[in-house]
View (cartoon, rainbow, N blue to C red):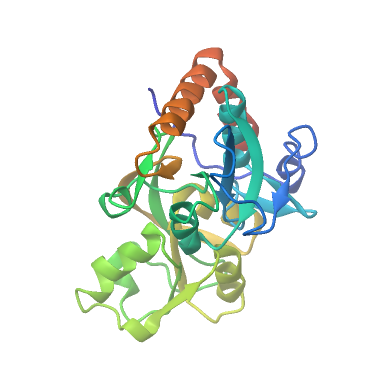
Length: 266
């Protein structure tokens, strides 16, 4: 399977709403719809606040992952059972507890996560970026330049992992200077208000915020990550269904249409 890598240019508010309505996205409260109750159903879990992959706009879920996951399930013999919205770090526990059947949340495939869940074939490649305030006089060009800064991360993400392994564990940054958020939207608000100095996050998301908010991308830190849909460990039937669905969308050209819709310049 060929992984598509969009340029990372963000989308505007009108594009956010394109996938809403026709797709019939249904947001359900966590715990109200238990995964595993119906073996013919796939209940999706996601974490809004990660544009353009998953966002909440006008009370509705939208985004590249949202449309892609629904389209993938539609290619299978399963029925889509709706969405459960959670904080990012609560998604894997919800999957393991069978409250959801799959995770569509721009989740990078890592060795640590692969010990807890299974992953579909990868569908997107990315790196990490560092964003700073638009009017900030400090312009870091490498991770080492962030020493002593107040750094924002989203809990459970690879961005947090980079800060931990490359800055805190090396002694370049004090643990107290790491600020952890439930989602990056809250982190960007603090960055704009001067409460933190920088944020480490996935490159396409960083670019989307830079296109729409008073922040800029200072530099890209190459991590060569790949996103995949997470499935319960050993759930071979749903993994096979998602892999086949991804392949079918790529072969038909529908995958590229979604990329073009959500990522300008592709």
